[in-house]
Amino acid sequence: MKAGSNLERVLEAGHFAVTAECGPPRGADADKVLKKAELVKGNVDACNVTDNQTSVVRMSSVAGCMLVQQSGTEPLLQMVVRDRNRIALQSDLLGASALGVRNLLCLSGDHQKFGDDPQAKNVFDIDSIQLIHMVKTMRDEGVFPSGDKLDGAPKFYIGCAINPFADPFEIRVPRFKLKIEAGADFVQTQCIYNMDKFKRFMEDARKEGLHERTKILAGVTPLKSAGMAKFMNRMVAGIEIPEEFIKRIADEPKEKQAAKGIEMCIEQIQEIKEMEGIAGVHVMAIEWEEKLNEIIGGAGLLPRPMVEQ
Amino acid sequence: MITGTPKPIEEILEMVEPYDNIIVAGCFGCVTVCRVGGDKEVQVLSSTLRLAREAAGKKIEIREVCLERQCDPEYLEPMRPYIEDYQAVLSIACGAGIQFMAEKFTKTPLLPGINTGFLGVTERQGEWTERCQGCGDCVLHLTGGICPVTRCAKSIFHGPCGGSVQGICEVDKEVKCGWQLIIDRLVSLEQMENYGKLKPYKGWDTSRDGGPRRIIREDMV
Ligand code: SF4
Ligand code: SF4
Image 1 (cartoon, each protein chain N blue to C red):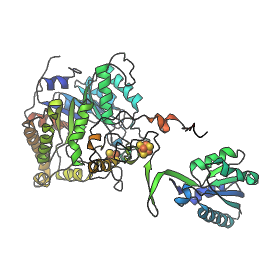
Image 2 (cartoon, chains in turn red, purple):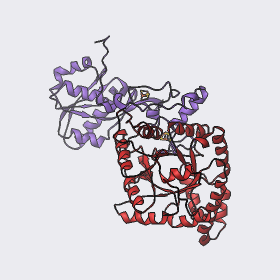
Image 3 (cartoon, each protein chain N blue to C red):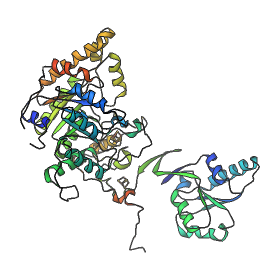
Image 4 (cartoon, chains in turn orange, cyan):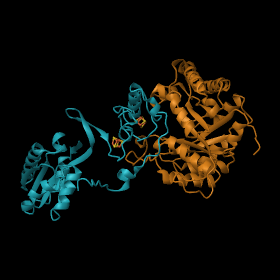
């Protein structure tokens, strides 16, 4: 075991893993996190806590992780390199590990232009791939990047995000490979709607044996309505929802679109489960945590396995 | 070259408000090429200021000068005999030139007449774009001659990030993704093996982050 997190144990035991995510609130109200965490509890092996997503200021992801942990779910800390230089990254990683956080997702972070403070100075001292490398060095060699010995190495199961639909095309697999070489133990993908394209991506990844070197969790996001589908297609970089997918929801009357969205999400998970090289699913039910139980249960993934330490 | 843009005239008028006797100083270097601080701009700016101040009933005397370069001591010296006859200098050279003049003539207030921009190139008449941030440790040989520090909005070394869509950067529809450009170029140079290598963390100590920098060429001093 690299970090001994619940997520790692579940994956290593060969179970199909499930993760979800919790966005911390725009304020200091701990109850907001605890309420969301309550809805997540029992449905997942670990729960991502986002780090100032889209550069909109929110409660810190480390604090959010502590609240999720308190409420009985294993947290997965998201960390972006936009806001912290290597000194702050190392320090926050040591702190998070000391508090018992065992899963980490290394990300670049959206440009500050999209958030509350477009005039902020960004950092990007190291990039997300170098962050993976840095954490791995600290965990496995017990030293700081500077070479000095650590008083206790941080223990993280190290993850990264990949977008199987990203531009430019020729880079998808090589960049994935770079992340594995840097030290990624698992990956969570951008949410998938175009299954055919995702299957082609997985074929390419399998040709390079990447699915054997890392655990791949496929990302899904249930759609609440045809309107949401169209909005995401237009506004969210790197998301592509095929026409026929949108049509299936749009063909339903308004009041039944949400149920259709959930049904389709469950179908997707079932299809993903059968794909070679996929180790789990990451369900991003954005501000719709109350449906997690229905989706994950509907896909036949409950109860979650207990794997001994 | 070093590029820049003129400061809004209202801002300049506010800066020169306390004075009735100033020098407007241009430079024949970069700012002449990018048409923001050469002798023509000195003339135009001076006339505008005179007219505005006359209209406001508070006349201003202006001496117009344009130096070969404001960033070399030898070209600043000729100003010494007369500079103290004036209450202030409004310089439309780059920030380096303005500061150097301020250092040499310690009794005269220096006012910036332009906003210094970046190290860039002339795309076409009237359009300049940034190319280099002077990071002090050039990597262009590894990135197909395209700078990841400058051309990528996040200055990352293993791009592109998730925000790259059809060659466009997430920050602006008008901005090309630097990493798409790098990859296109590496593909056409058949140097994609450079992409697949993990790059060491960038040492920003040779960049701005090491504090003001100095170059000493032993063979020249
Ligand atoms: S790598 Fe550094 S020196 Fe080279 S072009 Fe980019 S900023 Fe300039
Ligand atoms: S889209 Fe391209 S240029 Fe823009 S931040 Fe991402 S990698 Fe850099």
